[in-house]
Image (tube, rainbow, N blue to C red; front, side):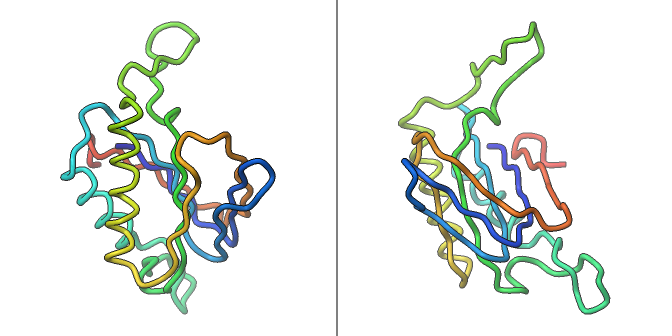
Length: 150
């Protein structure tokens, strides 16, 4: 499973021109699911995401987590995070999970976040044509791959 996490001042996702998820200060998380992802990947990523110290403390140092600042989270499915560009110029999605597995993992990820986080968890609509609007804070953007764990 791959996450692209962006610290934002605000973010929203629209489907057919209607807002389906919106947050103020918090994390915008784009999520891609691999064919081999399991519940272990979800557990590791939720823990890592909620404890990432990327929000500034009173000394203006990135030392606080999304839990510490009680910020919101917006999760958006994005299978293109699973792209491989190893050969040629056309991305390959051979390692992206099929729709059934991907939607199950996406929903489990959101459920696990909801259980562990007191602030609002918003989401896009899985496999919908979405438009995402955001104001990046920092900018701070973190890439996490549960298979690499670095």
